Image (cartoon, rainbow, N blue to C red; front, side, top):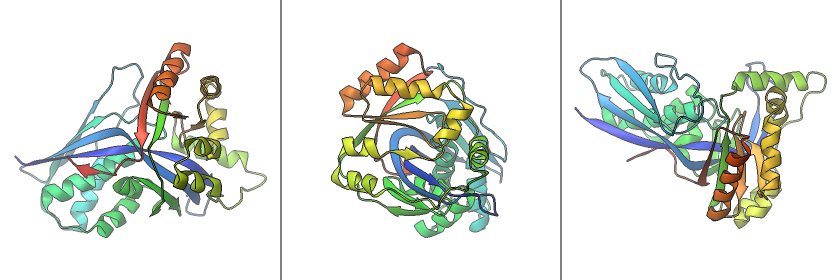
Length: 305
């Protein structure tokens, strides 16, 4: 049987500006995405019928408790495969096997990454001939982060996050991710954000110019100082223990530290590989997280391997 395998990176938000909740339930976003080389892999295998199935295996040493990943029609990779099949009238099924390294419910878009990977894998398996633009259109219906994870690299995100355009970023940046022992619901974080702004709505979101300047210059120190996340307070309200991770990051002289997306993963910017290893050891030694993983970016988006 024919198979295709796709590798897809995790996503972080170097800044995340969040506007007031829209009538459709979404929030306008102004963000800068970066893809990092903490990656899931999806293997797509042809089947003899039209079923679309998925199974999930977790990478790592089991030090953190992984949130359950749906293995039915609610799985985003399954939704992606079905959406592609419907768009191109494909009369075939697929068996998807996901090997997850991106934390589940960790604020790093693991589900969206798998959706992007499934689009690329099934497109190659079925030979749909979809253009990049057509894949992006399907991706936008699946989730705000999915279009970026087709692109990878470093990019601006607008709308509800699905409007993606490249950003100039020189050099490579070194990150450490303090991974919590359990996930945090994105919906709960946004609900808390709305509660915090119930009396005074937040302003229209903008990307800080100093962050774009730091990326263009490849200046890690300036980038660390420019990191921002409008959801951080809401995440800390729901999980106060994340504040201790931020304190340890400061003790370890991280160039910057921020809750990643809706959390609970906290991202630390390091000077180089040696510094990232030191920060990872410090995080684990102080017991403030279940795991500490170092990675770097920018990284390409979903791609065949």
